[in-house]
Image (tube, rainbow, N blue to C red; front, side, top):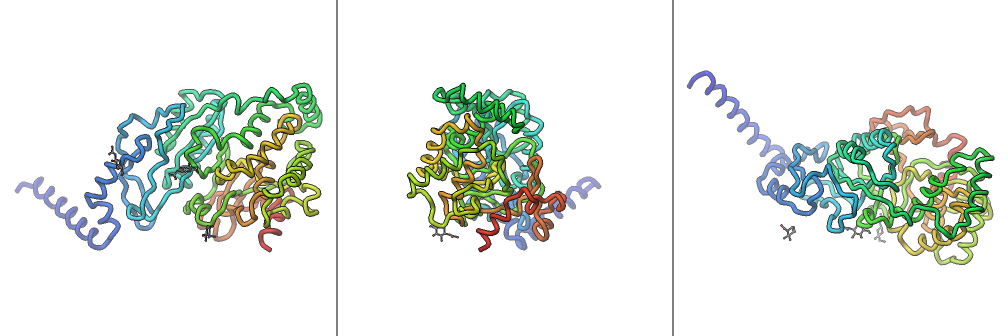
Amino acid sequence: MNQKQRYILLVFSIVVILHIVFVHTHEEYGHAFSISNVVSRVKGNHSEQAAMAITITNPTTGTVPIATATSTSGSILAPEITADTTSTPPPLATSEESNYRSANATFVMLARNNEIEGVIQSISEVELRFNKKFRYPYVFLNDEPFSEEFKSRVSELTKAKIEFGLIPGEDWHQPDWIDEDLAKQGRDKLVADDVIYGGSVSYRNMCRFNSGFFFNQKLLQKYRWYWRVEPSVHFYCNVDNDPFLYMEQHNKTYGFTISLFEFEKTIPTLWGHVKDFMLQHPEYVARDNSMGFLSEDGGENYNLCHFWSNFEIADMDFWRGTAYTKFFEYLDSQGGFYYERWGDAPVHSIAAALLLPKDKIHFFKEIGYFHHPFTHCPSGKLYLDGKCSCQIGLNFDYQGYSCLRKWDRIYLT
Ligand SMILES: *[C@@H]1O[C@H](CO)[C@@H](O)[C@H](O)[C@H]1NC(C)=O
Ligand SMILES: *[C@@H]1O[C@H](CO)[C@@H](O)[C@H](O)[C@H]1NC(C)=O
Ligand SMILES: *[C@@H]1O[C@H](CO)[C@@H](O)[C@H](O)[C@H]1NC(C)=O
């Protein structure tokens, strides 16, 4: 044997010996490399659109993708705008494949083409802190078609399935039965009062859409859970435990990270209508509800507290259910999304607080989050475990404008 052959033989022997040692000492390593396991993964036909990954299971960090096989139905980089009714959520991993099981869940983001930089910021952080490991799909929604540039730049950020949807006009625009003269008076008044987005119709469209329409969009119908992400937010901590599974396993319906007071001028008549609804439909009001979060006087007046809905992890089946559907339809029929400027945050929050028992609402204190101008920054062990990057001093939780104290007083008692 010449020098080169000896060298090759040596390297080969080391690899074989290491493999034998690992197979016998590391059960998971052996499992990951058993042929049947690899083959069953490659043959899997559950989801042609999802990138199929051959994975190696690392006993400490969970499943880490090491290679991506080419999908048979073309690239995930060019998903279609129209809903594909045959597509299914990514396969549920069985406990044999990994100790991880995924939920029937998706990210959802409403975005405009010109918000691409903020979208990239948000998605990059979602991937870095959470989703590179979990691979939940994304649904992007827009009232105008997404540009090719938007789609390709977003698709480069993740190996997860991405779908881009166009919101039907009737789910977005101001309905005909709204009296435009009255609506204009309402907008002018808020402009005069210097209320943010006071004069914007499209902001109102968005609030109404998020209140009553997003969860019934074609691309979202196949999912139960969603995590709402907006452009230009930050995620400051590793999220190592799947929040969707947490929700599922603990029977939670609505999850938040930041709560605060609403601008009263945007919702002057909202609470009156909520009270009317409760009187007309006491059957939908939950027994052990969170009225103590919303009111200082047992429901007579609204204290303006709400969960900040730019972050939500929640169950769309709740929004789709009878109680919320009736609630939304009642409020919508009052016209306040346009005559005033009702936000989806108070609408969602009031519904979650009154139509659900309080133990169905969850505070995700471990999820470090920023949406201009507020930060939720975990402290203590959560900060260290999450390898968080936020400044603890900026934590909004118990600042004057936060409502977390009101949450604590009902939840911790
Ligand atoms: C896809 O997988 C399912 C169940 O794993 C199986 O019943 C079905 O025959 C497969 N279809 C194809 C086209 O391989
Ligand atoms: C996911 O949830 C949606 C909405 O509840 C449901 O229609 C769908 O069948 C679920 N999919 C799976 C795979 O469970
Ligand atoms: C969740 O609800 C189910 C069905 O109502 C119940 O069997 C289960 O014990 C509940 N789990 C928790 C953690 O409360």
